[in-house]
Image 1 (cartoon, one colour):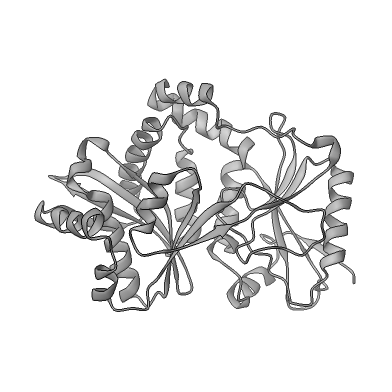
Image 2: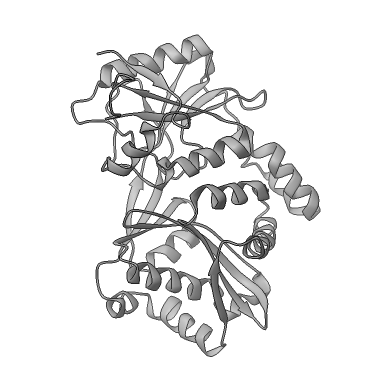
Amino acid sequence: MQLYEFDPLADRRWDNLVASHPRASVFHQRGWLKALAATYGYRTLAVTCTPPEEPLRDALVFCEVRSGITGSRLVSLPFSDHTDPLLRENGADQEIAAWMQARCRQENLNYIELRPLSGSVHFGRFLAPRQPFWLHTLDLTPSAEQLFRNLHKDCLQRRIRHAERQQLSYEKGASSKHLDDFYKLLMLTRRRFGLLPQPRAWFQNVIAGMSPHAEIRLARKHGKAIAAILSLRHRQTAVYKYGCSDAADHHLAGMPFLFWKLIEESKAQGMEELDFGRTDMHNEGLTGFKDHFGARRNKLNYFRYVEKKHEGSSLGMDTAAAHALFSVLPAALSSRAGGLVYRHFG
């Protein structure tokens, strides 16, 4: 079976495939791919069994990451929790496996990484599993009253009621002012955990590319933004992607308040599921927080094909030295550094 390469950002057939394929997600949307390309300079690439003159029936999409620091690779997709291969049940598994191997050798890539949502992939035994994550999803089909009853009584129900008694104001939108307030809180949160903030341009490009399916929710006290979340939508699935807050105001329960607003409004809009995103299995605090919503927890596995000469050569930002540096950088420098550094770690 012959394979064809194409650029999904230049091929008008891509949107129809994402709209129709049962495994497509928010991370396949053109706006998300455009944000990755515009912010980090990644080249988008897809491979398919469909000839160029026919309607697109299947595809496996990647971003090409070229870095003198972390090496070169194809990732499906960077900064995305999961990206299922949009293939048919009787797809060309062996041909795609051979294509990956050939591409690694021809382009001198460190590895090719897949992030499937639907479990194991079947492109041959040359794909090795990576460290798994948890993925939490919440069924939104019960009534709003039942969804609230399913929340942990002490950790969520009482805190949401506390936030309401505190008369927190609430707003939702995607304006420059919403983004400014969100990004200020994000800077505080990333500094608190010793992490470099993503560049502001990333969020600006996500909102521009995904509108009207990208929204910022803000909780305020006396006009001051104390907590914010950024969510996305695809079909009947709402996706929580980023959250941030001011630690000085955690006693006001702004984050539980905003998550309940997201659940309540997604339910009212006909959403059937809330995707809470991936969680590091070692992060027991965040895992427990998502468990408290009554969300279903499943293992999320990533896979890599690694050329033997590159084994063990990839680098990461999760080092004590990096955390120490990021926690003391001035805000302006941290934001600028995020724009320079993040593209190397997609």
